[in-house]
Length: 142
Image 1 (cartoon, rainbow, N blue to C red):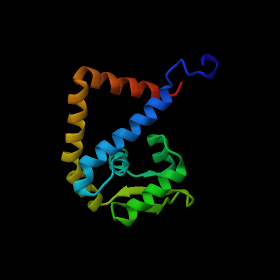
Image 2 (image 1 turned 120 degrees about the horizontal axis):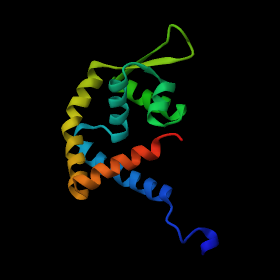
Image 3 (image 1 turned 180 degrees about the horizontal axis):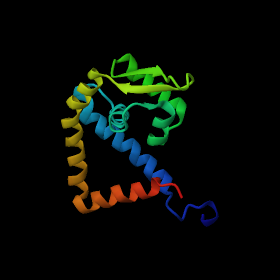
Image 4 (image 1 turned 90 degrees about the vertical axis):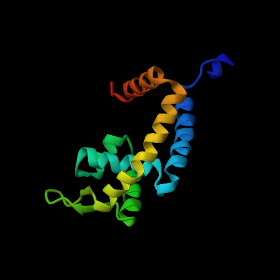
């Protein structure tokens, strides 16, 4: 079994399973306001980083451009985002939050906070903080 690597836990597998679990967990908390955690994360990133291109958004969220484009299109249809071609480069779009999108974030935030608190209560504050630091460390480029 050692030659197959089965004697060593795979960090990637654990993180991916945890991601799926946490996405469902947070989505449950956000269900009353009709938004998914992935959508809320994208909206919050656009507010945090102001108007940015799809390419920049992909870099920020560590997502490929196709996935970002698809998610932006869904949020544009719901009038949470708007996009326009950049004046300096017509091949790039600038994505901006709309007033409706900002309102959705405000509506979702108490539900998101409840999910955050539930996770923190389950782990304890110290382990929660350590988890955030560990995940941030893993995301940094070498």
